[in-house]
Length: 214
Image 1 (cartoon, rainbow, N blue to C red):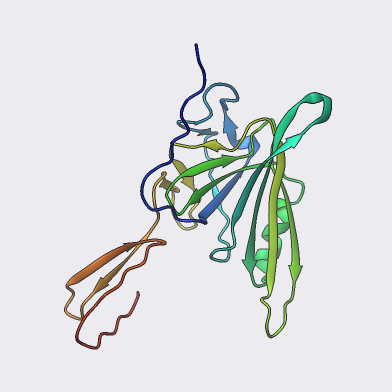
Image 2: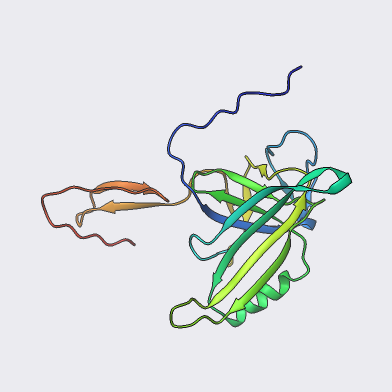
């Protein structure tokens, strides 16, 4: 049976960039589907485990998934997720220290709403970060990397995932799809438009208008 198919493009607007990234130690994953279809329907974590968000500088998170020759062992992939964390604080520095030497997998959601799994239990990601104090014209903060070699390309993820939330008894459950929106309303509360994340809108009026985003 022929295993090839037409490589079709999705119709509609194509937004570049990643909206958000989450990570968890590989030890949290249960019954990982190493074989089978590339897309994963649902991941299962051990009881009490969560995903944790890498709340990075907007627009800084990027993903690269490239072919890599392994010599006589054939060819695989190399996955590299990068981003930036703003400022130096005692809490952030302590949190980064806990990442050293860890083995992780990550989920990323792009601005089109698609989610991918980066890394696997067999081929985990490793954490690296570097700090620069910056200057009057350069930011203060950390550049971080989660990277590792893999046998397959990043896995499309179709399921939900539960994110740790401080102050809540349970986490917040997320799923594939576009992120938040901004609503534009008049002073009287009339809704003019709802703009998805990453989208743009043009308002034309014969009057001078002002808006406050809250």
